[in-house]
Image (cartoon, rainbow, N blue to C red; front, side, top):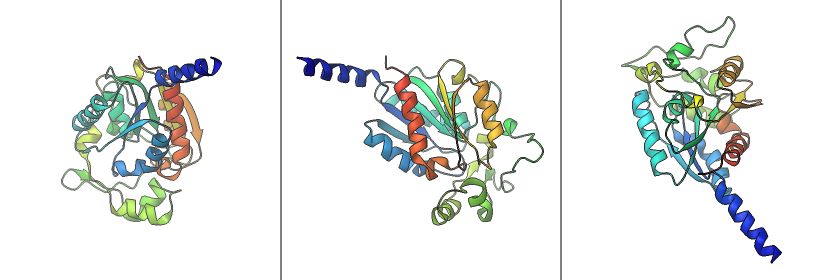
Length: 245
């Protein structure tokens, strides 16, 4: 009798936890970098979808993310890395989204964009090695990619990431937020202390403005590749904190 009651309580608790996760990548990369995080979340029983952003415009990326949200079962924890933070800020107002997690990400307010957030870096801040646009698209300097983006990723993988960059449309950087999800949804933020793409002080400022539950860890901008467990842990913390409807 007691065993049955315990099992029932466990099932009820599991049902109450938000079990769908949607992962959104940033600029210069595709969704394959989430593989390590995906493996952990799947092993722990979550339904996981990885969005493949076109990174041509914010509007297109938000649309791709909303399609993934719509297809996911039940409520969703929406996760964005880097520019993906802009995407989830706009897409996260979807009624199915129960919470938003930012991983070394931009957290814009109304009318803000990546372009506006990076316009005036403080003196001494690291400057990402973004090459001049070609045909409306941006790339990082391959020779400087590892140091700037993936300093704690094994060298062979960092080199592959540099050589397999996804063109990032200038229009996507200019896409402005209309209604930030963080004003109405609970949020979490993972600050990467050694980040040379979005400096840690900027991450802390954005996380504070959004009143995010914030965790800080050593690591590069590519923390989701170099240290999947710390990323998955925060995502699961968010899922456990938000109960399904």
